[in-house]
Structure formats: structure tokens, C-alpha cells
Image 1 (cartoon, rainbow, N blue to C red):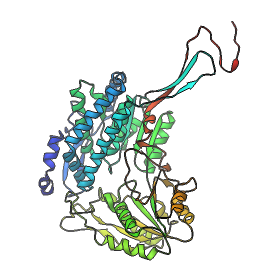
Image 2 (image 1 turned 30 degrees about the vertical axis):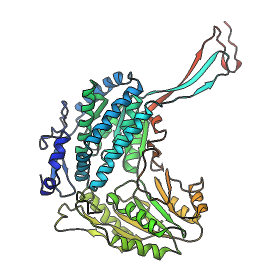
Image 3 (image 1 turned 45 degrees about the horizontal axis):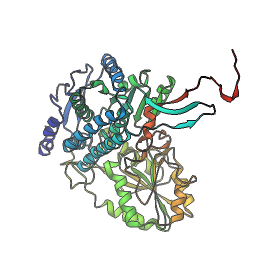
Image 4 (image 1 turned 90 degrees about the vertical axis):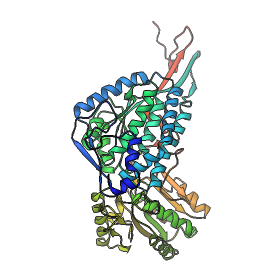
Length: 517
């Protein structure tokens, strides 16, 4: 373990999470060990090797699916409130292990420790939501047009749910899907990002402990590790009726085509190109707080990160000056040190994408007003730390049209009415999160109307980043159209069935059709 890992208790956290033998690839905590190649997990915090994890081979995957499908046959027979009780126990375990799991998230992914704790809290919150939901998986009753008949709808479990998650939220997004799928009666097979495999192992260990204590089959929660080739196993597998995938638009299109080719269902939560509109009636202080946190939180590696700030020309210079001043106060460094605001990017490939974006915006005619750049020297040895950058640009720039998963904020100017700003905001292929800063009620309502934001999330006087468990999370257009977490998102994890019961001695047909024998 590195000096930073020792100082901040990473070894102790791993032990508490049941992760042992970290250099031989057998750290899964499961009695079924994978037989594939080894992948190495390096921390972007200090560049140190944390552990080696063995990937899932085709043979391993077949065994996992046999285990999962067998577990489903038992799990689906449990009444939903009993399934909710298991989720409650899982949430309680997360409460007990919140600090070590949050610390592992911070060290393996690179987000701040407070954000790591916040991510585990999201897991706890979705468990609470799912426990209540387990007694509310309601269908509908309908009046039949035929006398002596009753009609109703009910929801049944789908089966095995495949989950592909991204590195930036290495535990929470899995829990959003899994907690709902479990109370729905489904079992889950999860492929976490190959960049954060230990977070997946930790969650699997916690779940396995709960299942074992309740004498339940381990296949209710299954873990497979590896790169995209392991994900292909799931997307082409007819035994998996639903694949939930979080990641880039490019990845989502590949998943969607593969799953659709076998007429399966996809839940896609893909890229965002999120904007905040700043109207002349905006509170400038609130705007700065929302924009800065949205742009630099998690080093700009959230799907809801603020990428574009669309500012009215009458206040453009004031807002620009305030944002630039705020950026000068940012502290960049070890995310386990709570004095720092910004941690590292996930790896050096992400750094290259960041640097390419800065070069591209200048080539297209933009101007860097906070130049950014790679940080080097003591404390930055991993090569993953960069300065958050700000560029004046136009929405039509090719680089602005794309999502750069890094702390790069584009300032755009609009004139006239709020409709002009909304047109700019909607003028990208992504449709995840959006916001407007205004104290003008008409502007706010216009932004939220059918002619307003075309995003799945539209906020007033808060930023684009972050979401509450109670609301469905997801976006439109090339963001994929999927919804996870709250509201009625549970329905995607179940199959709907319409039932008609005839309690007479007659068999009348619908629409008055006669068929006498």
C-alpha cells in the first residue's frame, strides 16, 4: 500500500469490505473464482496499484448464468414484502459500512471522500425507497364490457437483469437498478467498470453476507468483471430480458442494437451535455455556486456535470468575472483530504481527452479564459490531476456539441428573450439535465413547459448536477430515454399482465361477437 493509502486507512477499509489477497486476483470474496485474465486496479489519487482482479471467462459466465437463473426460480416465489425485508437488511449493512465503502469509492475512482460517502448514502436511500415500494407494486382494476367479468392488471418479475455500470458512480447506479430489481422479484448480473472493479467486489461481498444470513441463494446477486467483451456476453444473451447500461452514447448504441436484435429490453442512461441558462433576473451568487459545483464536482466526470453556461448578454461580463474569481479559489489534490475541492480524472486517457478538448476549442475560434492544464510535481504523481478550465465558445463548435468527461466549462452568450437561450440549450444531441437561473416566474414556467427544455431533468434555481432518489433519473434523445431510481421506474423491471376472469356460466365474447356451437 502507498503512503497515502496507509495514511487514510485504505487497507483497513478493504478488510472491512471483505477484500483480501489483493495481488493474486482472488479477492472476490466468493467461493466461485473467475478464470480469466488479470486486470489491475490503479488509484488515480496516487497512481498506486490497489489490487489485481481476475476477469470473467466465457465458461465462468455460463456458470454465473446457471446460478442466476436457478436463483430466480426461488426468489420470484417470495412475496414482495419479504423481498423488501432483504433489501432493508442490505441497506442496514450499507449504513454500517458507509465509511469504508465511501473511502474505497474515493480512492479507486478519485472523487472526494465526501462525494464517496454521498454515493453510499444514495445506495441507502434507494434501499429505503425500494422497501416501501415492495408493498406498492400496484396494478389497475378495470370494468369489463361483458357482464360477470372482472379485469385487472398485475406485474410479475422479468427474470435476470443485466447491469452495466460506469466508473464515475461505481456503486450508486448499480444500487439504483438492483434495489428495484430485487423487490420486483428479479435477480441481477452486474458488470462494473473495469476501471473500478474493487467497488463491485465490495458491494457483492455485502450482498452475499445478507443472502447467506437469510439462507437465500447467492445467485440473486452475481458479479462479472472485465472489459466490454464481458458485457457482450450479456447483451447477446436471450436469458437476460433487460439490460440496463450506463455509459457513453457510443456504448449505448452498441448495447441497444445488440439487445434489440433479440427483441430484449434496454434501459439506457447515456451521455449529457448539460447547460444552465442564466437570465437577467438570475441571482448571481446562486448561479456561481451551482455552476462551479456542477462543472468541477467529481472533476467534471458526472453525466449531469455542467458543460455549458448560457448567459444573457446584459449580465455576461458580471457572471464571467464571478465564475473566474471562484475558480481561483479551487483547491486541487488528494480527494481523501477534505480540504480539497477537486480530485483527479480517472486515468491518463481521460487527461488526453481533456487536453484535446482544450486544443480543439481554441482551433475552432474559442478563447480560454481559465486555461487549465496538467498538474505535475509533489502530490500529482499519478498524472491524472488537471486544472478546471473555462472557455468562451459557440454552441455550434463541434467540441461543444460533444461531451468531454472532464472539468471544461463553455461560456455561451444569448440575447433577447429566454426562448433564444432554450433554443441554444436544446441544440445538442444529448438531453439529460438542464437548469435555469431566474427569479422571473414566466421565464421559469416557459423553461418547464412543453416548448421549453427537452431534457429528462429540468431544474429552476439549482444546478444540473445531482438528483434525488424519489424522482426518475434519465434523459431523452441520445441520452437513451431510460429511467432509473424513483417515481415509477420500477415498472421497467417487471412484465405487465392483463387478466380477465369470467365468474358466470356463460362465455360472452367481446364486441358482441357471436360464435355458437
